[in-house]
Image 1 (cartoon, helix red, strand yellow):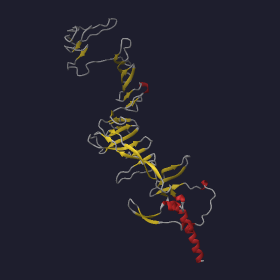
Image 2: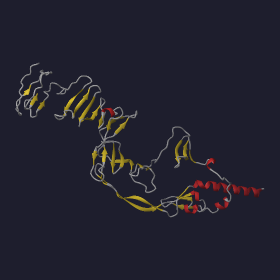
Image 3: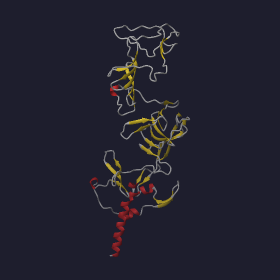
Image 4: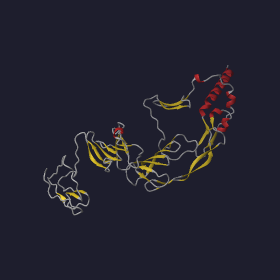
Length: 393
């Protein structure tokens, strides 16, 4: 046993320190473990705690070293006299994982690459794929604001690398995710930087009805679709690009999962196609009386209230002649949700008071599909050609 110098184990803060410079004490079984009373200082002449260790500045590394044989965990274990392994810190020398232990389980894990798992067991931790994995009943909880719903916000941006695994997480704020009252909102910095003074744009919102809203948080009332995109000033609202010319950019299916139309794109033009296969039709007969029906049409010139002068039809008038060309009912109304008062946000953009919404009755406007007039006009032209040819004969 190497001789130790200046060892005093008296009680209280006046206990002297164990001088450890170039000195070691080795205790091996079957020698009984010593029972020390009072405060013990290593490198500290006036310890105020039961064990106080102070680096004298010459080591340059950790002042406490915990070593284990290869394959065995090294660590510090905490608990009671009946269960001395209920908490602590463990380092697995075979897998190079560090674990924080609580309630007799490893709760917080860090692997050799710096990936973190919280509330996951080592055997169920997919550290290969994610830099941060939350398990059990846990959830990512970065910040909670007061007010309606208690919004939870993630302030740090997470980047995804080309291979599909989580790459890294930056410490500045380039984007936000917020969930409040079941509404999920993804916000991006308007300037594209991480300045605390920048404003935020609501890029994507998933509302309580399951609709996906892009570049807007407002609904369009009872007729709103599952997907609502709002274009920016002087920008196209939706862009469709295909891999090669001639492919379909958009397919339309009915409730029976049968395709009823599509939009196809080629090198120079776009085709809007609706189903017209003969195998879907029966009782096919030539049109007759097209000229007389065409004479009932009431084409007109008008000004839109919102601006612009065009030639066209009035929907309910056209419905009297070609009903298949018109949708909706004359003078119909519908209920639509609207914002009575906007949400109140704090300086950081957190919602402190929810928006007040109301419902009001608005016009359920009729529409026209002018392509449905083509068969009638074609048949009319054919009838006129027949009459002209008869007169010229």
